Image 1 (cartoon, rainbow, N blue to C red):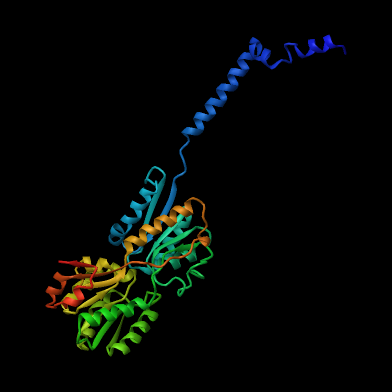
Image 2 (cartoon, rainbow, N blue to C red):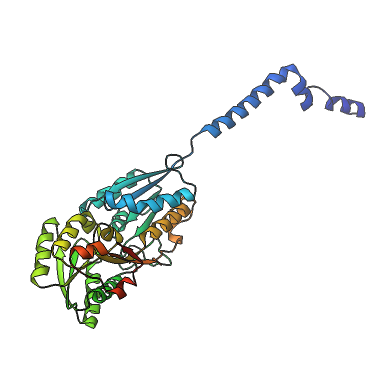
Length: 348
């Protein structure tokens, strides 16, 4: 092939890309292709983004209404808006621990992206329900002691979050109760048989009680009908104060417990601030607002791809000692000034 023929071949309209576009024969094909690309881009942009689904397994409606607020606020700060890019479903067992397996199974069927749990009973139900859906604990009894996670630093599996410091907190509560009631020689410990860590908490209280020379009256509550008898037994045995155990069952019967404590005129130490804000005398407990905010940050990490097994379980760093003075007045009790000076918050 000579030079001229080669030039004519390359310049032929049928093989020159520019000539194809300029040729009316190809113009409509090019225009149609551009239209398809633009239409596809617009359609893709208009497709609704997948909403992350967070499922909260909580104790009671009333408890969750307040406790969940710091979690929701922190999520908003992290860019999550309910109804726009996240959905939060709520379920409560209302003190009926036997309902937990079904509620946890329901969340698995809902294809939740993350299950958030409150309290000590819910994490175990979530663990039994799924080995794949990430679970974040907002708070609860010692997760390692209960076998919820293998190790704080390396939880493994699908569960992480925050856990309480353990039964030793009950020893601290007894110490503060002894300072508040200086002549304390006998205290009642009211505990629920549905709480997995109750045995360890009782042992811790009894250990500290021997050091403080305080007798402990153990009062087990198996159901709602046992409350009246338990408080009568405390009064009959001349208990001078009360320590209330934790758990979702007690949370569901908070009002009844506070009424009976006031009626029995017993200075009482409660497991969290909700009891004190509702009329109980005092509490020494974790700052659960801060724990829920931290739980939101952990949920954010998981939604962005981090595996729960790679997120260490954390313990609370901040604690509140809250005293309710009107509650003290109702039972004719005076809180010593030196104890008031140690309180992080006083309700007047």
